[in-house]
Image (cartoon, rainbow, N blue to C red; front, side, top):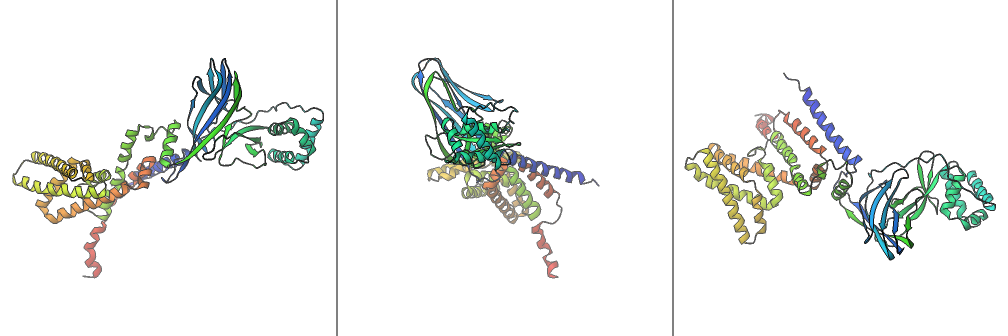
Length: 505
């Protein structure tokens, strides 16, 4: 007897592969497990205005990069008369868009647009560690004494770089603190904070963040303090000293990089407008696929037309699983093994009610005509071919009648698989001749019942979402079908044969 151990190992292997692929899609690429999970998609526009001097003009705008909780989907520029290009400086962790023109005068308006998806699974590069050296800071005279006094006071109530930065913010907020007031007269608060921390041998820099609020216009970038806490960068609010970045904050420009540089122009300004919209999990996944080359190695990378085709094809294993279960475990008889799956696919196109009516009309009419053909004693090939032609003619006739009487739904009857219907009519006709009308009703009814169940499964929102977005589900379905195929016991419908034993007859 052949050992079944390799068979069970193979099933276990399929299940592990299926679960692993599903986990990978969900955890690594952030594809939601449920279809009703909405995501926020932000359209942000940066508007740059400047007065050009009449000669060559160069405009450099710092722009956001991939970061935690946000995935950049698309970005573009609109700049009549200017050429634009994007560049990334990996060494300084900086990304810019640059506009150039040979000649520009008067007021110029340039636009940079970016589409960003709120994504808790966003793939983002890790921030580089700070260099060993500190930027040179020189306070002269009384400013030097005031800076040292602030540092000494903050160090008394701090234990690490983050708490030191928080204490310095607190001291600078005290209006009665004379040292702080003296320094703030000649230095901006963000610059002063980084200088004081640098004197304390703490790596820190200023970054620009943008608060995302739906429908806001003329927004500006807000500075935040980023401090190296010996193991990671910590963000602090410069005004309040609160630790951490709020969820609706987008880091726009990194690490001491100026937001906007203009050469050949003056009176420049940049403002931001934004709008948010909710998109479904499916759309969010599609957008991520377009922006991520790694994720593109999947069905989602195919053209939309092919994706739509596969969306239906990937439902067939669900229908096959149901048919296997109903036939092997429940014991429902069907006409043909997978005819109900194909009929269910037709139901998906026609809707259930129209599909059931069309199926009964086609099969019923076909059986009547087939009974006449059987009396002619035709050869099998000629008879089958005749049935196919008759089925096509019946479908055409019903479609024309439906169109004439204004039943638009009846036009979809053409979605039924003609060859399968013809073969079904042939099989039912033979069954009628050999075993009687009762068996035809049992198998025909079983096929229709199974097709309806398969249709309900195929049109289920969760099933459609999971089969299309998680290819690993196909491995799991295959494993379950193989397990069911190993079943050799009684079907549930056969248990009635033992009723007399239960009753003690």
